[in-house]
Length: 92
Image 1 (tube, rainbow, N blue to C red):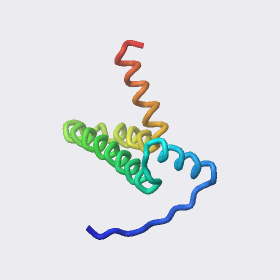
Image 2: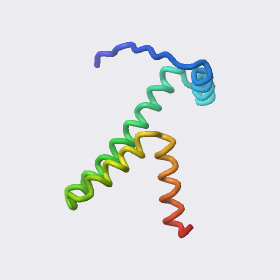
Image 3: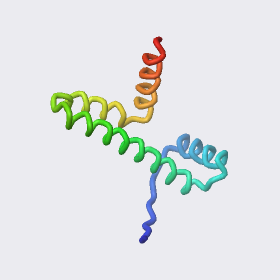
């Protein structure tokens, strides 16, 4: 597999946080970023697959799918949505 080097510019505070998280995990910053990006992409793929099945069964869910996809696009929103669903399922 061919590889390509990429470069990103980050605010100093975010760069420091990423370096610390990578160090805590015993990883290089590059390895940490790749693992984090893959985890995010896998989460998005799972959400898309789940909603594709719903959309096939009920075409009227398209607007709901788009709204949920938008909410899941942000990691913070995705976390809050998962927490809300867990709370509702627990009866809270």
